[in-house]
Image (cartoon, rainbow, N blue to C red; front, side, top):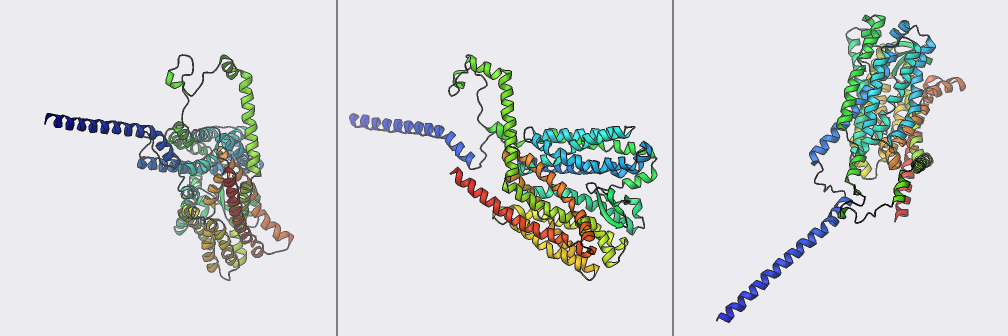
Length: 556
């Protein structure tokens, strides 16, 4: 009996010991496979970092970032047009000539386009939120400094630095926003771009309401200027009369109402107080925005900090100790200079490859064609309604003032809401190519309609369709640019578009004079440009697909 009990107890002990050993082995296997599991999840896009913020907090953070960038864009445009809007008061105070006034306004656009490229190169090498914060602070301080100048030379110097500082806005935001919203790039870019439409809507709404109250346009910042002095970077052209154009600032916060009651020197106080809000926005960008590149670098495996003979054993297992000769070589000024030369050569090669990229060329060409039509449409529309339909500014000015921003918001925001879904399903071309081609006959109908009511109705739908490409195109440029040149690609793209788009208004005038066309038929350049842009976008989509397919085959 005792022997049987002893045997049974022994079997139970062996069973328990075996279970404990198997459990311990399972734990060992689980712990040893944990790094592999983490690596697998990371490759699948699953965030397994325990220190990472909660999904809700991360989403709120990126939404806040988008809001800060959009508010910065509003301040960017507000301060950009402030000096042209106040120029009637600045001119007698500083005794400026007409040529000097034109240099302060038109010269800004050229300086801005030229500064985009080096700023884009810089944005690819440094912390972008910090760069934008620095630009915000600088253009705000230069705005405040401009209020203290006493000569044209001093004002021009502040304007040059101002243009360079403002060039930080779009290269940074065009490359940063798609990284903050990797799954909703187009929607985020549409929200950002709609800042300019919302600003126009607010300013034009003020014009319309004031007109209903009997206030003249002259009291609302609508100014008559010579046609050759119109700077479309800062003003919206409402209509023309002979050689003069009626223009209003793009962001019109009733500066003209203030200038009517201020003395000539009071422009200084107004210009000065435009600066402090930018300092606040710059502080928000510096303190609350994060650089996605820094976050990725922080999550990457780090090399040991201690690499000398006294470093801890577990830190030096996979990292051999540097020899004294290697340390001297690394610390050598000549080696550092050689490293900088290699980096500079790599950067130059990258820019050349970007400019030689067929995808980059195709997308930029399609966008520039559309800009030609858009610039021509906005510049000549008011004159068109006067000559063709014989209606005055009391009829067409409020209509254009409402249709342009409303159509832009509908097209821009609508494309953002649909753009990400269409991109994921491989149907993005409906927004870039299809909408541009569909806009062409509607704009042509607007130009050839027998009655101005029909013309305005077709214009609203046509202009909305013609604006749907902007957010998807910004994402396309980001996608076709190398990861290390995202901001540079956006800067080159925007610079080329600014220079080519300005040819649109001049081309309409050229067609009128060279081929003896009336304005109605000369403006058919606009729907033609939209149609060609749509075809070019379709070709660009095909080029991008072919390059992606070729890159995928070479990596396999």
